[in-house]
Image (cartoon, rainbow over the protein chains, first blue to last red):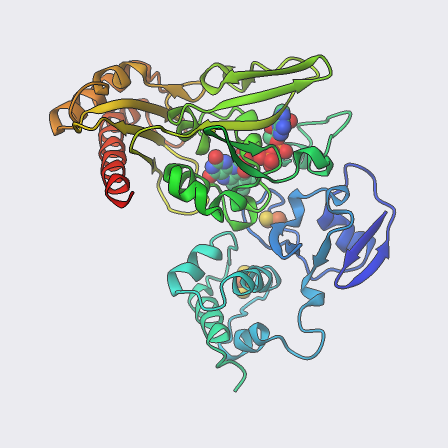
Length: 152
Length: 259
Ligand SMILES: Cc1cc2nc3c(=O)[nH]c(=O)nc-3n(C[C@H](O)[C@H](O)[C@H](O)COP(=O)(O)OP(=O)(O)OC[C@H]3O[C@@H](n4cnc5c(N)ncnc54)[C@H](O)[C@@H]3O)c2cc1C
Ligand code: FES
Ligand code: FES
């Protein structure tokens, strides 16, 4: 099967019951997307499919054949993405486990709504849990990235 | 999907309906009704201005389903077919008088949504049948709808009780039509017909709304579970029903002024 990942076509052997997360991590070595609850609660496995953020632990690989998939590895291929710079500025990553998922959800939000309110950021990121409770830093990093004031 | 992931569901075959072109996401208005195709996800509804204008309660319900990630994959039809008594959009769809289109190689049939669920996690679908669309009739009079959900937190929450209400107003201000759906209070989403009967023909005064709230309890057979006690659910039904009806009435009046 052919998956379009981070702008590149990738050929992979996939069984019908295999989830996108497992194909990314085990089949393609893209281990930036994390495996955690595997039931849609935590968002650690978040990737973009056709620009929308989804939990890759609940999407079958076969469902997204032909769709453009973006993983954390595809973010900031030409230097740091403004969101990544803002997360660094705010020291948003504590243990860092949730951060790839947080960045992908933030990215999907800003693509649709470049200047969100803080409430909209909280709402949009509600599906990304952070065990280290870095929520304030993450929220403010997203606000800064939206305002274009990150990385200065 | 969660069931497959954990291995307690082991289907022989999984059919990916999202790959069928005829079912692709589509929200269409024709001949006095909206047709929402099987692959339309919650996010598609949230982004549709016509749905927001005609059926605000459906947006309110779609918006609280899981997280953005869930709403980007969760279809409206899946929320119905999953047949969970706690699902958020079904009470609204029942209130709006929605029906579902079931298709098989033997043909197509349409059935009112309140006849679709037969028991806990049980639907009227025959082997070989699948749902291709949801239909919602457009109200013919000034109308308003509202959805209220009681949970313990705001995000990713399964409801303790949820209520969908839809109201149409007559020119004299009396209630001309009423729809009420209740979630999390029975084995499946139920219609509160007793409460609807009290509302129709009456003026939306506080006493009438309170009486409708009490009457809604006849449709409720709640149980104790880890989210709530049955007694608490029973106590909350009248409150939520009267508030949801009041909100729907307010919207019906506002809509009337705009047009
Ligand atoms: C973390 C998490 C949080 C959630 N939170 C909420 C919530 O707050 N509120 C809420 O209401 N729901 C919630 N859900 C439930 C879920 O998102 C919905 O039920 C969803 O709408 C299902 O749609 P789907 O397209 O994913 O269907 P699937 O999961 O693919 O299917 C669900 C069921 O319906 C059947 N089915 C699907 N499509 C059809 C069809 N066209 N014809 C016949 N049968 C069909 C399937 O066979 C299956 O039995 C949550 C789920 C998760 C994982
Ligand atoms: S691992 Fe997918 S949502 Fe938690
Ligand atoms: S930084 Fe540790 S889980 Fe979020």
